[in-house]
Image (cartoon, rainbow over the protein chains, first blue to last red):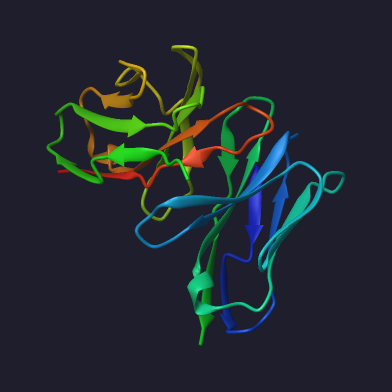
Length: 108
Length: 114
């Protein structure tokens, strides 16, 4: 069983829709990261959370430590948001444990 | 904004050859990492490095792999005798500390073993 599970694996949305990507984890963590990976492979860090909620532009990330669950929301989605969104957790050591990613396609 | 830079962006190597992947972490960062992503799979941790020594390594990081910080700026990953299954995207990351700050990733090196 994967230590970090994401859902859905694939998501297609129409431009303007509100999008939610979910992440559940089974290990104790010190922080959770949301990352974005575009075709061509580069990884960009969007958020690092250890509690509560963070907002950056149209992106919102929340985490519930008791339930071991986090969500990434995109408001007013746009085709340029199309990418793979990855949840990764940092446990007792510094390494990140990655989920399998959610492939998001936003259609105009 | 400071970036982690990786070179080359794409490396093609014959099986059995040695390969060195290079990374320049962000200058005031102290913690360094290598991750890899086999095509179509999730990103996996290889090794972390702090204070000129390995602090943690995964079971993927066997005797064929080594890391080095040869000077104050570069951080390298060497694969001694490459195998077909080493074909992957290799990401370098660096962090200022281990708790309060995120890891910053380079754009990756795509390694293709023929």
